[in-house]
Length: 314
Image 1: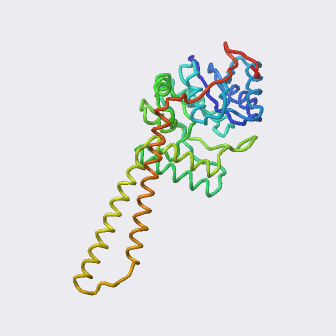
Image 2: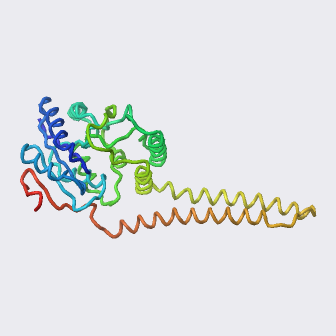
Image 3: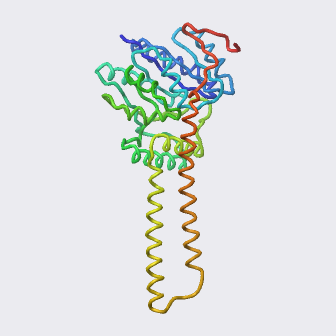
């Protein structure tokens, strides 16, 4: 059987490293699937790296990557995929809210010839109303902007070696993993799953961080927000024409009323449209600036396991 690489992005997950290694490893061992586990510590501030190092010393299947600072989950996923040596790779959350037993189902579909196996959420688990609304709004927007149905999409997916190579060779710095893994195409299958309750630790996602995540990924993956500027310009033009006709008719009829209410309304409305448009354009310019600087997506400061075993303090 061919090797499966399992990438586990980890940020302040000191309580879940050992549990994740044992649980995922146990599932794959029982299924007879050869595997490696790649934990990517995204600049954690707790003992996540020390626990990864310990797990790699106890289990030859475990490898670890440690960032010099926090670069974000997207960077952690890409670093894990770049380090993966398997014939296919699975990305799964370290908190085990993605059920590890589904990896076996994904692997079997891959053996049948599918090159991308998407994990789709059948149930989002326990979320606040605000968080659930923000998530649904984001996925609705990103689905319309990209042309892909991403309403139940997740980072939990299996990628064939060909798909992995395509993703890691993309040069864009602000990569949206969920969107790009759909954009690259390939023969695709889906597996549904229910989001599990977190066993330990706390979720790193808040409604505010989700909104920031949504804005960053929507603008990095699609130019749709730029079209808002055009739409606002058309709206402003229509409003101006309507007010202009009304004013002209009143002037011809001799019933024009003195006053500045209409003028003030038009000025404030047009000023708001201009400022919103400039804000959207400015945001895209800042993204272009980030890309052309050519800085790396992440910086690796330490590794462990495999052929690169170093002490946690090295």
